[in-house]
Amino acid sequence: MIALMKNEWMKIFGRKSSWIYIIVLVLSLLLGAFLNHSLFEDSNTWLYMNSVVYSLTMLVTLFTVIVGSGNVAAEFSDGTIKQLLIRPHSRVKILLSKYIVVLSYSLLLLATLIASGYLWGLLFFGPSGFDTPVTEPTFTAEEVKEGVAGEQFFIKMLYSIPNLLIIVTISFMLSTLLKSNALAVGVAIFILFFSSTLGGLAILFSFEYEWLKLLIFPHLDLTIYALQDEVMEGITLPISLAILAVYYVIFIAITFFSFKKRDISI
Image (tube, rainbow, N blue to C red; front, side):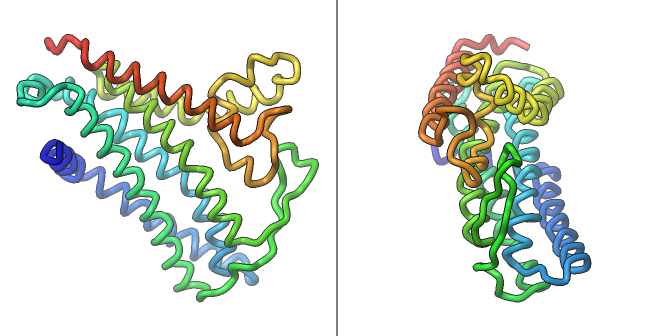
């Protein structure tokens, strides 16, 4: 298993794109820090972290989706799937090693985001501002959430992890279901960018159609709970987490079952 994971790490970092994603992330943070410092005189490290750094978690998700959705599909597109499966390892172990490495890469990008963001913040603003009061609008914009910049940043980052896990799992599932690398990546990116729109529509019409509360889309952005107690009437954080857990089990089951039964003829 360890050998399989090492091999997958070599594959990921053997691609120039994997390094480019990290470089783009670091440079985006640098640009954000420069603009934040230039445009807002009263800004500080943790206001920058709570606004710019947090907003760039979208890049982490996007880059991980591209890597995850092409992980297995690329083996079919490149014609290497047969060589991969003739090894003395079960399909489950092979797929699990790929999944763990993709998740690890997503966490590496997230750690790079936080660490680089904080370092740029120190460079431009100095080590201050954790307790800076912040006021942020709730989802309905009828009320505001008052807090401190540092705490809000860490709460929102913590709540963003389940979203990252689910999106990565969906993209990895698509990679096992589709033989075309380009198609898998395209569908995964489409889902990523339209999930927030679908989630907003589900929340909007949930008062009229109760079943919309059971869809996955309104529960993907758990950072809403950093600003308010309910995302929809009667739907709190534990309920959203339970719904996401059910979908996660379903996606994982589809992923491993389909790959185990997959015809590898090319």
